[in-house]
Image (cartoon, rainbow, N blue to C red; front, side, top):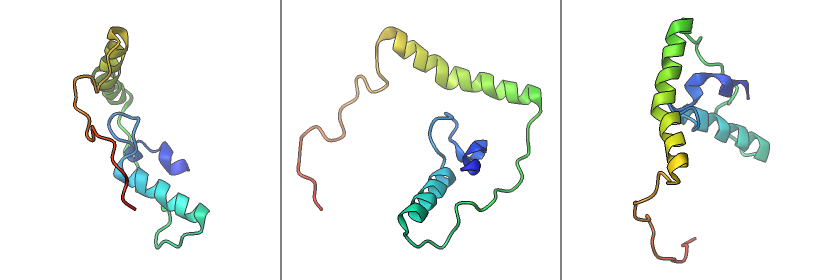
Length: 97
């Protein structure tokens, strides 16, 4: 999926798909499964306006500060981003069909 090489298909954390990235992956999955859909995941994106080299490096530094440093810090301290949070569903319950 060449479209996923486009940074616009990813969230700011560069790890999770953005809404359009999810949409395209779902459309591709439908194609593989033979589910009819009204859209094509191969639809080209508008041209990407690329930032200059220096602007791109600034964005990289901001990304490192916002996402990489906190992640590394948690690993060093042996904590999870979910530590101290209550579970959304603390009790085991049956799943309704």
